[in-house]
Image 1 (cartoon, rainbow, N blue to C red):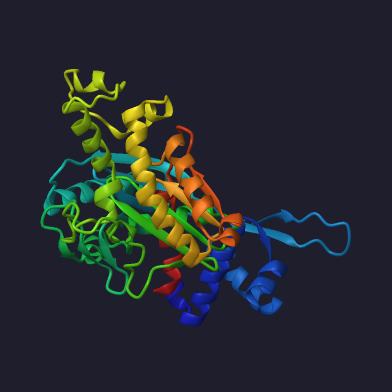
Image 2: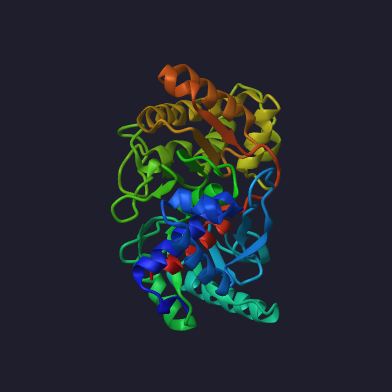
Length: 403
């Protein structure tokens, strides 16, 4: 049990796991070099982690000279974490093994104006279901990780505000879950969960400095500096959506006016489309048929598809979105000098036209040396991304060694 070890020992074991998560496969010699520890110290901690079942040896490295070293990797069969992401439309959950693979997936729907009590009941149902499934699969559960929007205080593990949930203020969700299920629970902002998912399992592997930009119902940012997730003083960093882009503009849920989120979110884009179509905009649009249909609604995927197919109205709207977001990203690129910016979320996924415009703005307006060393990435396929689920799982795994 981890309680048998002191804080320094647990810290070193946590760092070893972080290196293995980042490298996927690594030798004891490389670990000793990367961590600036003696070989004997590394050997001692590796033995503990092997005895705990968290890592395993998988053979020897290829070498044309000298003694070949054993290769270490995480053990995917040792157990699972319960990973939960609270979205606007649903609660996405899964049993995740240490290498970020989904062992079992389970979702429940949400609705607009959902209350705190309804969310808690859904969480209880999800966790009970996943506990039963883990038992059925004979999988040990290490802990529960919950990613959610709003302000999550990492120092107190309290979710202070989530404007998408009615009556959600200063909720000690960690204590509620731990009391009911006797499982260790960790909370993290959902955008930071996605950032960790990309760092350990996605496009951020091997990248020490990158920004993760989430654009969906809300807008947020994850920051990785020198290989570490930056969360700020108490976990509130990355509130990109609540930086002011249009002073005196639309009233935001946070109480300010003109926040970036009010200008580029999924809901705002769909509202702009509907308003233009209903007032009889002279620009002919393929989206007219959706407004004239029985559903009389437009979804963000409809606007993106139309834009990619050359629809003028959709492209006009995304040109405006690109200006708002692109100028913010220019500032961020010049401040942080990242190697990579990842665009994620429903607004950017498969959005070729938006990507092209943002990429152009960054290349033209960033400092030349910053632009030349910067790569922009977006998802341009139809694969469902689980980086936030895998990211919150990695957060649970690594924070077990900080208790």
